[in-house]
Length: 400
Image (cartoon, rainbow, N blue to C red; front, side, top):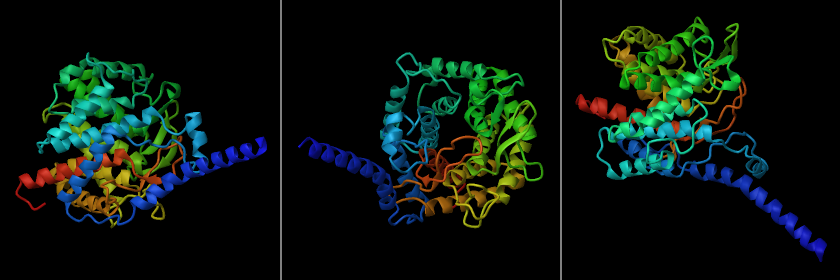
């Protein structure tokens, strides 16, 4: 009898483990039925936004591991997801919804955002859970970008992010990705911190913050770019400037792009760094457009046509190109490239409004995920891009 009960218990454990493995597979398969049916950007924008608002309150777990078997073991070990990954997912959704609310009166959306902010910040405007990594800077930037709130209410939180960034300053005067990796500079960090530094520096009259953002970008351009093609490597070593990882990692192009375009866009026309960053924007725009495929996508390795497309690259680079289209010399080309990228993203959007086929989380320098699924980060930048596109060209009287 005891042996029989033990066998039943083992069988039940096996069934539960298999079921946990199969649930993500089934959800992806079911979600992809009738994928790519959106053809109208307004309809698509509404579907993206509804899904984005849903995720803001029920953030899906972003896997750390590519393991698809016995994932219950990863869950028990705490290796399934990490909070630092969630910060840039949440930030992208906030940035997208902020762009949406600039031209749409949606009290329910504002209420959802306020509920989210209350989950992160206390009544005194401080973080409920003190941030440890500079990833949180992009979330602080997203909060500062919300037009309908009194951002001064959250002053302690944004001041804490500036102090956190200062703690990550290296001997070369730029910011490290992690204090445990002080000797390396990652392309991700450009996207994490530079928009925040410019916003913070302008708001609180701290020119050293803007200077740091520009230095972070300029140093990466000098040491982290493939000379003749101007695409970033994943990271470089500070000591000897040796490049590390992959040149042309798709989301890496996106990280540099969003850091650069939001930093440049915020600066007033007469700012002393404006013209230098504008030259960087133009040079980078010409570079990324050369690697775009006819269907509007960028591959996860942009230099290899055999690789799978990465929706997170398309979403972030389309946002960058929409911003770069403000430069008259490249305006038409950037707009066409952004439009083509949005067509690609519409083609990989599930009927639920979720953009599919984004590369999973990167494991280490040179170790990239081979899983492609939904990602709130991509969703946020798709919302951000299509709303900027619709609002910009609608206001000029052009067809949507």
